[in-house]
Image 1 (cartoon, rainbow, N blue to C red):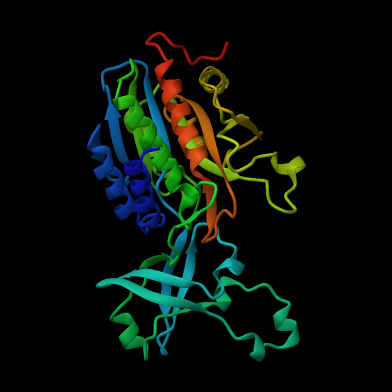
Image 2 (cartoon, rainbow, N blue to C red; image 1 turned 120 degrees about the horizontal axis):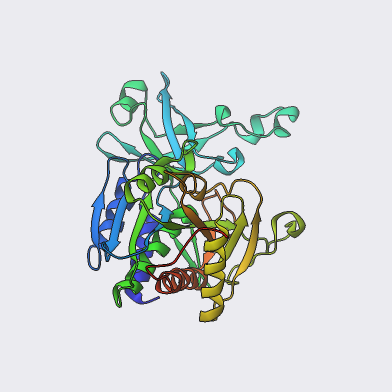
Length: 354
C-alpha cells in the first residue's frame, strides 16, 4: 500500500457516513476512483467504478461504505436531544461518548448523557443502560435554541477520529465497513495498471447496516447484472482475551483475509479465491457461514436469477464500537487477492457448480 492509498484510507475512515447518510464518504470514494476508472452514482447512493466495461465475464466487487450511527427523534423542552440507533449498537458503548450531528447549518457537537453514578440507587447501578435512558446534550438553553441547530431525522456519529497503532494497525469508528469499500477500490487500482479480460465493477454500497431487504447491494446487483461477485466485509477477530474459538473460529489480526464457506457463498467462487490465494502465496483462513453471512453477500447471491457470490472478510477487533481495529497488512492482502482472482478469470469461465 503506497502513501497515496494510505492517506485516502485515513480520509475515508474519518468521513461521517451512517446508513442512509453516506454522501460524504461516497463522494470521497468516487473522487479517488476517477483517476483510473469510469465512475457513476445511482439513486440508492451507491458509487460504481468500472474497468473494461465490454469484457467477459462481468464481475462485481462490493464493499459497503456506511457505518452505524444515531438519529434525532425528539428534542425536549429543556433542549436535550433524544435519539435512536442507526444499526446495531451495544448501548453500553454509548455512555459518555462525544457525538457529531449533521445539523441544520453544519456539524453540531454533543455529548451522550446519563444519570451520574452518585445519584443512582443500588439497584440502578446493576442495570444495563438502555438507549431510552440516554440523551444527547448539545449545550442548548432550551428547545427553541436546540431546534435552531438540529431537527428530527438528523443523523450523527460518535466523535472518534482515526488512530495509528504499532504493528501497522489502525483504529477507527467506521472500519465496519469503510475498509471493504477501500479494499475494492485498491483492487481496482491494481487492475487498472494492467486491465484484465473481465469487466470489473467496484461498488461502494449503501445501507448495509440497516438493510433487511438488501439495501444498495441488491439494487446495484440488479443494475450491474454480474456473472459473479465478491463482497468484502469485516469479521470478528478472535485473538482477544476470552474469545470462544470453538464457536467463532480462529482469526487473528495480521493473519490475512478470511474466505467464507456456506449456503450464501458460491462453491465455485470460493474455490477460485482459494486457488488464487495459493498461487499468489497469500495466507488465508476459512470461516463457516452455515446460514446467512450478515453481509451484502446475502442480498447479492439471490439477486436477479442468482449471482455466484464469494465473501472475503478482514479480521476486526471491537466491532460496532468507536475503536474498531484492523491490520493494514490484511487490507493489502485482501486487495491483492481480489485482483489475483479477477486476473485468473477467462471469458469462458463458468460459475455453475457441477
